[in-house]
Length: 341
Image (cartoon, rainbow, N blue to C red):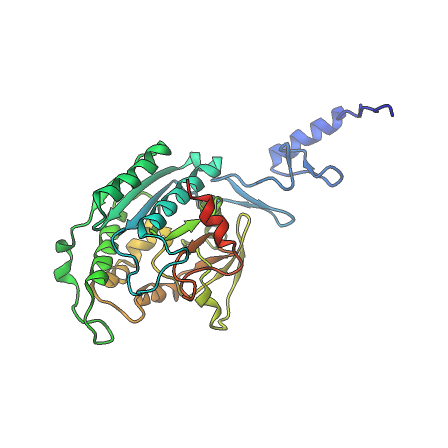
């Protein structure tokens, strides 16, 4: 059968109309071809532009008034301790360093996955406690393979230990592992004081989806522009959040749905402004072991918006029976294998 070529060309008046729409900020969608003729994209492409606008069909465009300038990713590592407060094994039952390596790979993969992230400054810091020289060399090799610079900070617990109350809120003695964790959080907060804009505090057992960092940054811009305020983003859809029938609010991010949450663990993304505003709350986690440990964070969420994605962007690889770990409705094995090498 003879192929018939489509010789239909865009008319002069149509071209003029498209140019006028571009200048006025309007988008024209061809419902037959799914093409957005004003931008040369298709409706299933990423339409949002970091720092400029957030577009979601059919809701239209939101002008970004809260532009993200920089992101500091502070990773707290401790390859010598398998579990902070549990004796159970993690899913896949590997040594702790294996989870640390895959966490770092997954974050680095995610920062390269969305080309728009090149427009902002991304800095990496590792705050490490007591990992062996061999484990630190493995971490260094990963950053070199990604040709990415980072700063390694070896935690000195003696600088913080005297400020930690020896009895926790339950009247029990605070363990050495918990003290080191509190000191690591304290050091990370001090590093945040030198950051420019957003800070992502993350523990070394959270494996990230490839689109996680881009989704968080563009969602931060979108929602903070909508409500005209800073926010907190938790990247994990924790299973324990489903044990209570709390009322919530729903938000639309870049490609995910988000919901308001009142609790998180200690992996979260927020702005330097939030850290400075609630410095006393954050610092109290480093001087007293609360019950629950993250109570000072939850007090912040009573006043500021904290959101969590559905489905999860980052999976907390703990024991399979822990309600504080593996997010529901996610292929855990897939994300584990994706970050093997």
